[in-house]
Image (tube, rainbow, N blue to C red; front, side, top):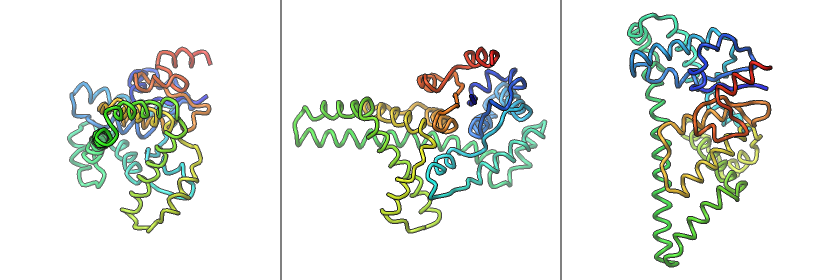
Length: 284
């Protein structure tokens, strides 16, 4: 069994990290979170730097691939290298070489992917996710209002029941819709950057090539999104960041997520809290 320690677990288990072997791992995403908002307070700076240092000095394996790369890897017919997270790795090692944070900021300021870039990227992920949820809710409400004018007042109730049934019972359909959106997002990004001229047939071929490599993320992100839409609720601030950790346990076979986050702990078959992890790990 492999144990994946996300950001919160790394913080809580900081004093134990040196005792863990290579059957435990973390990710660039966890380190990305730790590097964000280092200037929030002096206390936060010390805690975060300590955790990052202990991760690097430990036997923990670090999966340096970004979430975007892990999603693209789900489709063998396309490829993508995220140079930003290669740069993040270098930036982290540079950061640990400095005793003075301001000197680090000054000396790395001319880097394309500097500290400010990644701090802004963290905020961008969150803002994009929340605004996407708001836009989806707005569009759905408009469709319901238009439908009520055409089909009568019961249309709103029927639509809400449909949305609830979609994420609760029509799981395969809901996941297929989510996968479709993921594929379109990947391809639209590639088109914007590379102008490949992919046709609808190409898009369908890529969709069909999915290799099930991020099934856990697909399953629970689909359920999360469906529930939010059915309830017309916006995502919480860190939900996008938290859900991306699911990409690092892939299809869930022989991998367990260690987290104390309530959103992730709801995934009972694939997540345990840090106390349970320490108890289990000490017995193995």
